[in-house]
Length: 112
Length: 113
Image: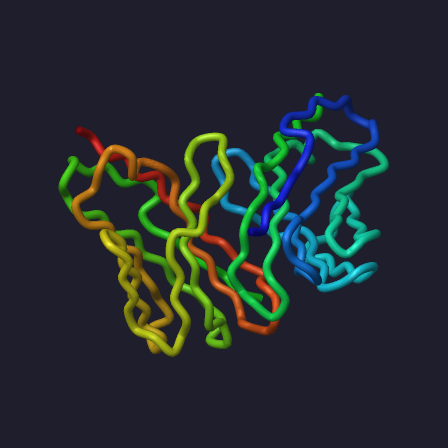
């Protein structure tokens, strides 16, 4: 069966520091991968999605970037964090040519 | 782009009652509508979904209806139980080979014993 791993679970970072969140999927090939952000008490907002290695689409302009160095690895990065980057970051995957999306455990990021 | 509105933002019911959460969408090209349940501090879990070629889908105590003409869809939970308490999110996307979901803002459902 497919599983999705996301780490770390929680992170406290100072303003201006870099960020790297990692997500990996097991048990499937060629998954579509997504990064969502959930601000406190809000819905989920799609940040990036990827349909293949090196292919990244950005949904909203922001201080973050994403990369997909391997088929089942998706990384969310920032060079300099802002206070407004705080939130719950969720990685998700869907099978090739499928629409059902499944989420990782999430990373709660607090920028101080 | 797509815009999804969800109501109500909070819903309190007594155990055994039914709960209904409603969503509207703006993009008539959307054809996939999932519902997610998120317990406090945890990941959203897909609980049911419906595609635009279907008007209603049921899975035990939960059902989803879709009115494509009016561009709205609803989640129905019957015989609610305290463990149904969570935040529920509706979403919409086009079935274009991947799942770029636009979410509603969520409904906090509280089921009192």
